[in-house]
Length: 310
Ligand SMILES: C[S@@+](CC[C@H](N)C(=O)[O-])C[C@H]1O[C@@H](n2cnc3c(N)ncnc32)[C@H](O)[C@@H]1O
Image (cartoon, rainbow, N blue to C red; front, side, top):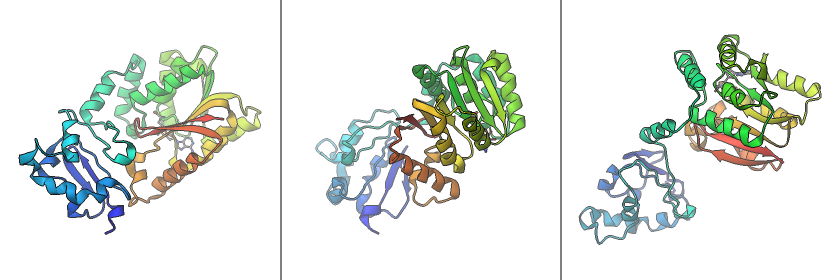
């Protein structure tokens, strides 16, 4: 196996090996039990080149005080918290937090979820497809972006029972409007009930049908360049199509946010090549070179990319 392609991930004391790992790349056994250490080795990384030397200090369980190995530095920087540390020198030894359930609970406790959204979330929890709903922290970020932008005209592609659309509608001004595209009548009924309960129905223009048709008709209606904000959260293989249509509809300086860009981490796994994963991976790759927008990929929920139209 080429050492260059070896990938080793340590997480919560477990070891996930995508390809056979050279024994020299294994960390001292005792250290595997430390919480959430994360390491990636890549070509040219000094850690790989020096790995045989480094791992030879596996006696450091006994000589830990005198050992100057990288693992000691790693462990020394770990508290009992569940961290992931991207310790690759190629990334400047930045410490990058990864979400453990405990840390995610903490984040959720720090979300200001409006009561009406909590009720909608709880009602949706028993419904088929409830895992599709954005998380409370994601909804809060979407609402924050809408507020920062001072958005008045928004579009959502993929409403489901309305959690993200309601979060947006709640922060829109009274004169604001959200075009909400959804093809499933049953889930739309729940969404409409909650728009009503929240007193925001007048701000939401529900478009029942295929989202691409709705977006085309908005363009034909002369609405290009008139929207401030768009959120894409529907069929993943259609993301590129929605993005192109929304890029016409959104004004310069407006935002297009795309959900599920990390796709449960599958985008980064070369062994996963199903149609949805490949389509999201390709979309991310193309977006990186797309000079029409500024981009920021945010590891929140299942990953969201924020695009600002130039
Ligand atoms: C991931 S869910 C949306 C979740 C929603 N944003 C929320 O936070 O609750 C995706 C939704 O997109 C809808 N959808 C999928 N393809 C669509 C299409 N071509 N046109 C309109 N809606 C579509 C599905 O019916 C589903 O309700």
